[in-house]
Image (cartoon, rainbow, N blue to C red; front, side):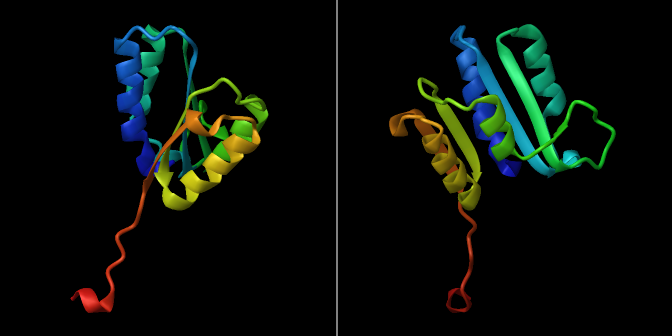
Length: 130
């Protein structure tokens, strides 16, 4: 979600370099479809790796990219992957988003030790910091 794609893309590229052969599902979301980035790079990786599935989604479609699904990440995961047992899951994004997704994945039967996450915590300066 938003800034979370770069670390996930690194994990993806490493998995492909290591010749990972199981299906890979990459979900990238944004509030607006114009906020999706590295789109063409991921599409190129997908063309070269038929086991890579890419799901771009946004709550609001504000450009002409017809490949973007108008859906939240949460709904997409719930609908496409109702049973997450035996999956390795990697989540990056805002702290609130990561917590919500960890809980959702767990409730969809993902093992706790199979959920890997990296939350981006906003650095809030206090008046006393100045």
